[in-house]
Image 1 (cartoon, rainbow, N blue to C red):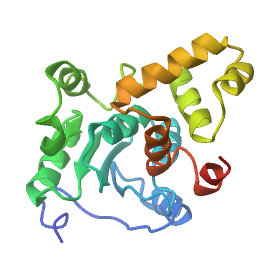
Image 2: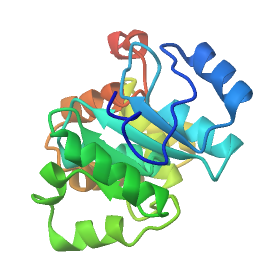
Image 3: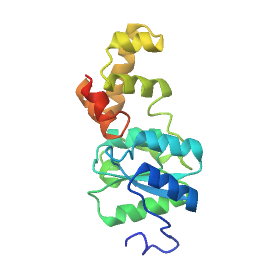
Image 4: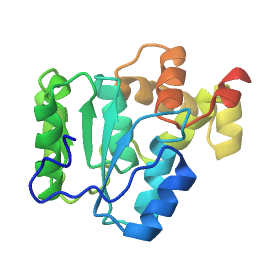
Length: 204
């Protein structure tokens, strides 16, 4: 109802599974996807990365139950162009729609108000949904996935042809970038944004 009330905006389809989403994309070719973060449904970072690879101009706004900066950073790094907390008032979603439609990246004010100026400037300076390389590099993403699957620093190093010291450096860098203190918190973030599934987490 909120979306339909917006002038110049037309809802062309809805989907509650990834397969249904792809059907709707083929049928309607929308300019923007409004995606509720759901690990169970498969709506997370991996899907965002896949959609952006298929269509780099695709704009994706994520509605998330989390209002922590780390979640926003991971999903923006995956290619999302907007991040809104589901706890925020409707005006935040309206603002996100307008900002993203004009080629800018949007971050919910509940998060941006608490972010340090340097981090916020990195996010706000992005336009047109460019991948925010200042957040997670390709290698950092690989390391995060492996750590969340229970790999030790030695196993990460062996798999990625790194020294153990370098693998440990990546782990420390990830905790700093995401603002977490423990490996368990890294697991949580990677799981919640859909980088790893519950079966992978149970393995550790």
